[in-house]
Image 1 (cartoon, rainbow, N blue to C red):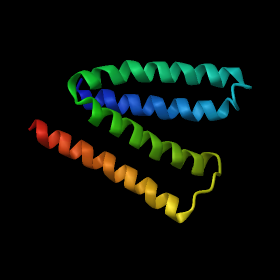
Image 2 (image 1 turned 60 degrees about the vertical axis):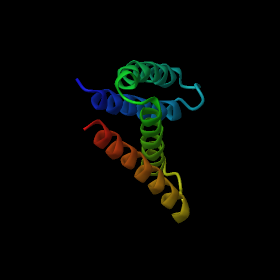
Image 3 (image 1 turned 30 degrees about the horizontal axis):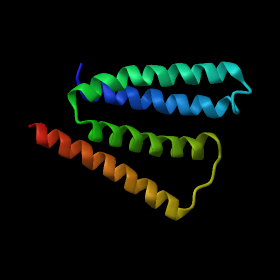
Image 4 (image 1 turned 90 degrees about the vertical axis):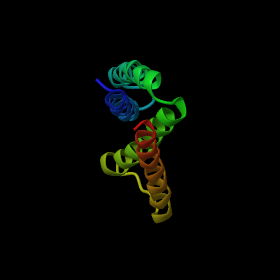
Length: 110
């Protein structure tokens, strides 16, 4: 399996961990908190092979950028959190940067 697969898995696990952390309500609901910790731990097991094959700056920027966008959208749709128009613009800029890094990293390896 390629490094991009591992990076995608790390992103999914990190976002799921964040979602579960919110559900834990500050670890007041321990089962959700324990699941959150498990997801974060598994996330790093997926992140390590991606960092072995790809530049750390690219991996970290994509992982954190896509995670920010996904967590923001989950907050809006699952938890009814509000974001203003300008906040959506800045989130879109993060996503554009993450996609741009992936595209340029793939092109540089070709």
